Image (cartoon, rainbow, N blue to C red; front, side):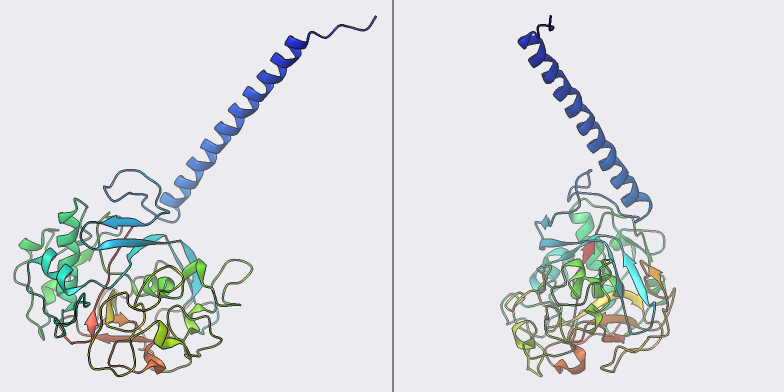
Length: 348
């Protein structure tokens, strides 16, 4: 006689199987999440923080009460010039959606807005020195309860750094500034971070830039940030960048952003970077190798010392060719001040 199957027992058995299955799926998901966090923190050197500094997902934009949105830039690998094998891998970070404005600069630092074009509403700060830019970064970090990234003479408190060097003056003491790359606070982007963000990172929308392996090998040749035009074409540059020999800056964010949602990565004002200039400055339209660095890099942050700091992106008074090109690099001494010099900030 066939065995009678108890319907309730069958249903109960199926229910228990599903409970066990759900348990294993949940456990596996937790293990994978832990593995990803371990990888990020130990291999990508990525600090996973929210704006208040506690543990949270870092894959979303941040909001600052003082400078607005900071856009998430994912980790990835890209080619930085035309040299074979000249690749750099960057960890994830967040970058200010706009250039720092004159009002933001004054409110955070307590220093009068140095901008020559202060009559322009919501103008990017200009005429600040590199020294003033790093001073701003630490002041903003302290204001928001974050760990400052920069230290001078062993102190992260800008009030202990002494008087900011006057415009046109370089300072060996300030040039010896140290950076804590794991700090939760604000800092200037490295030159590589700036390039990676400007080309659109993994969201680069130009056909053929990103290989099947996910490496962005073509973004460095773009004619401007946000371009989907082939080669270095600049037919639509005026939609994305104020960079055509105009007489003054304009309000931040008036033109189109790049693929990540970053505005004015090309044009308006040059943007100071952390790096000392290494190798050759790129004043051509070919993206020729810099010399220093060369080959594969991971989180390259420039030479240990130098005479000039790099800035990127071009400015209002420049011409699109070649200043708007993603690979185009320029430089000046850290004490230099000019109506075309501005900056934006990053944090983990």
